[in-house]
Image (cartoon, rainbow, N blue to C red; front, top):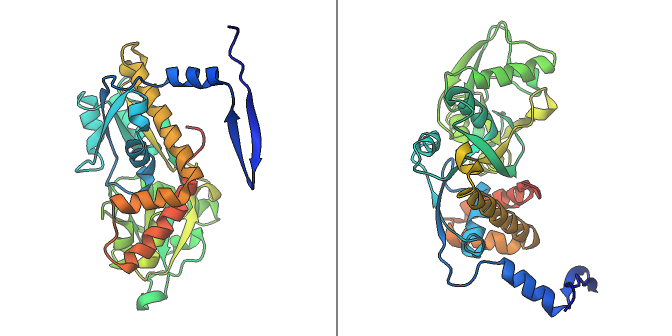
Length: 320
């Protein structure tokens, strides 16, 4: 009898520390907290915001290592046909949750109303900003000489800005803010919106644009390198723009509050936290798991993906 003694002892083993639970009662208690084997799993549909890519590694790990199932969920991860599709599908009730960027969450809540969408977790926080082409690799000749943010807007010249959703005003406003923060202005510069979807690097390689925003440094910078393109990068938070480069989960507020369904969202979040912990403790195995699921087609792509994965592993926050 008596209370369970939480006798966890930290033991040094070479250069590692690990927890040693000596009390059999403690192990039994932990086992009871897990979903019983054979219990029916609750279906749960979640949509990514774009194509599967290393930003979504926690979802792959949680699937392959059974973290979703351990928390009572049978999760189906959906790859959308269009980046902006998941919000419409979510609000129609066909999804339980979806991935989006924080800036899009703010925009969608403004358009649809705060009672339609709410963010409840983040799983990626990367470096985001503006990428620009420079003279150099592959014989690329840049139209503009850019060395600092204010160089993006030069009097009497055009600035071609690649961004999804062009010709909307949001992303040019980001560029203008960075320029002004650096002491310049865009009053005498012709802003030309370019919409090449989310294929930012391709827009620069094909000379469709001079700069691209919003790019994730863990993905687009290695991609540009692999495309033999010399690029520079301006980090948003260094030039007057809030650091909002995060991927978050969104859901219907009523579903999050309902006693009948709230547990599913808590379980999803816990499973993703466990997956993130596993990634940080097992980076080589995490990379191998990704490459097993999404093999590269040649040596050049393998080098690029290796660099993308190395950068991305640092972008999963400890606290969601």
